[in-house]
Every structure is written in C-alpha cells, then in structure tokens.
Image (cartoon, rainbow, N blue to C red; front, side, top):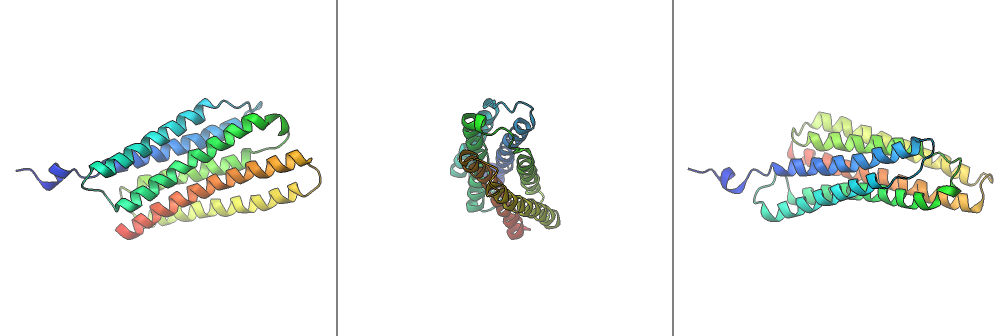
Length: 208
C-alpha cells in the first residue's frame, strides 16, 4: 500500500532547489570580488551572466515545484519569499558588473575590493543558512543570523566613510557620481543577502 508521502512527494526537492539558488548567488559575488582584486580589473561578464541564468533557472524551478507539489517542507509563502530574496542578489551583482564595464575608465584608483569582499562573505553566510534549513537548528541559525547582521553593520560603517571621501573635494564630479552609485549598488546587494538571511531565520523560528 502506498503511503501519502509516496503519492504526494515529501517536498524535499525544495531544499535542493533553494540551495542551488543560494549557491548561484554566492558564485556571482565571488566572481565580482575576484574581478575587483585583479590587477587590470577588466570586466569579464560571462561569469555574472551564467550565475544569473542559474539563479533564474532555479527560481523558475521553485515556482513550478510550488505549482506541482502537494507537500512542502515549510510554508509556501516562505519558500516564495526566500526564492525571491535569493534571486535579487545576483541581479544586483550583474547590475554592478554591467555598469562597471561601461565606466571603468573613470574609476582608476578607486578600490571596490574591500566592499566586494564583504558582499562575498554575506552571500557565503546565506549559503550556510540555507543549508541549515534541512536541520532546523535554532542555535546554529541564530549564530549565522548574528554573523550576517555584523557584516551588514560593517558595510553601513564603510558607507559612512565613503561619503566622507565623496565630500572631501578630492574627486571630480564624474567620480563623485560614479563612486556613490557603485557603492550603493554593492550596499543594496548586501541588503539583499540580509533579507534572504532574515527569511531563512524566520523559517527556522516558525518550524523548530
């Protein structure tokens, strides 16, 4: 006799799909950090396009699985919210890379690597949090949530330093505009990581 789990499925495929989405987002941030660390910093956009395509494919699969599946490991609204938050991370990264490729000649001497490193760290924590959803360990998830919060706070502090540089009078108008725009894109990408982490944390709070 077939069990209900056999007939309807266990919903475990959602863990794999969400993990794939988180990893694609993380890979996009790693590609950005690597580009910012490179001596010539010449933009090679293929890595960002590929990560975004992987993220989009994972997002589409999550959406389809929600339509096809009778059972989910946690609430459907939470799966949708987490998938949406993860989707927005590589979207911001690709936005940065595309614009950077157009403006690179105006950005000589401006170092984006430290903030790109923080974005990579933040997305790495998100990957860990998504993997922890299989275990629903509230203590571990709380520690990761605090770690992500600390990265966000440090990013906010660095943004204040950025504004001091912008208004120092050492930059021309074009550099001031570009510096503000690019760092705000990076800040928004870190915020997207934080949003994904909050959703994952709330899922564990509700289900542990």
